[in-house]
Length: 98
Image 1 (tube, rainbow, N blue to C red):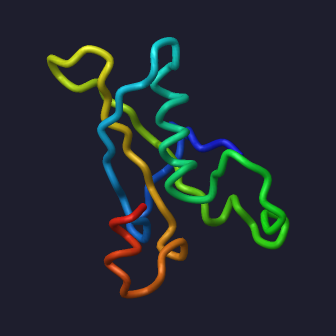
Image 2: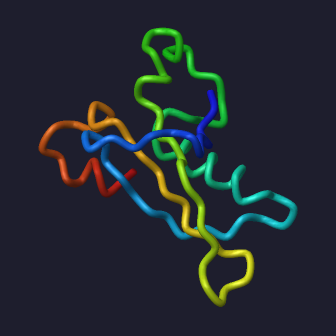
């Protein structure tokens, strides 16, 4: 799955979030933004047997933009769009833990 999609068109049905990030040395901001989108939605560092049971592409977060933080070296804001179906309806806690 590709989690960094700068060409992605943001729709008004999505949940949008902004994350401040500092990539590790040698890691491009696009890769770090993709990791944020992945780990806060459908991505994981290990193989999960349930991955084949659902369309991960439908539920994944997408990092659609990255901007440098003014005056801060190697710090960025990653903008991530999530499908509302990823979250339990009415659960603010579920939203904040993403």
